[in-house]
Length: 300
Image: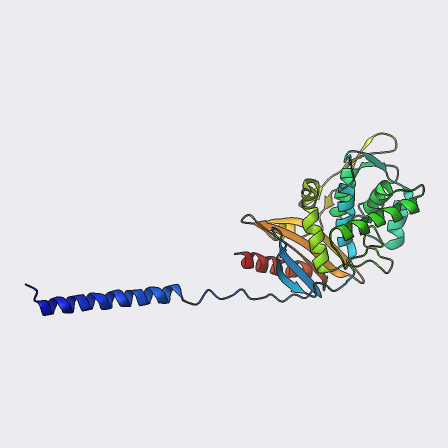
């Protein structure tokens, strides 16, 4: 039989137990959160990463510094072409000697297009974005610019690039070339290029091109026969090294150093970013990998 005094003791013990349990629960609920993700170090002079869903900044280093962009310029070249009204991707363009001469004169990256061949706009876009063909860029600028001379058409096309940049709010960007081989006034920022890539990725055609690792074009020769071109391999090594990569474009040059605009999707979340003026082709990929890992860790 439990006496009144014993009952009081039991109730007190139970109360202590409840209070102690509550204290433990409170401690558990208010325990310090998991260690914050460490901000990565990159060799690139500038870098920027954002959440593609809402444009929220996830990382920035020199993100608004104006720098030479190299062939990341070709993202805008493709954007302008794919934005043309009533675009026919199967329309054929005849490769001119001027495009070949331009490659030789500038020692530029090439899609190895052959003078006289008829190449579709679609094929030119793959030649532009995978092997970073400056000959393909020239052909597209000549095709989609306006004017009675090639020089006028190219100038018109570059004008469209700058108009598009302004419409996208790329306030620290200016293009003076169709391929990144600038004439002293071709520059952008890591933040602006990331904004451009995010917008360009809204195009299904753009997404299909920039995520392609290799592409073989079949062109029509001047005699009407079919030519199977050498396979174009994407210069973006992240497509093979980083799971979830969906693009976007490399760039390099004496002034630009080594650049990479990149995007990847994991767990339904997409991170887009840019590194400019890194120290090597290997390092730009390492920089981008670090920033992608950081971006996804921030998103959780």
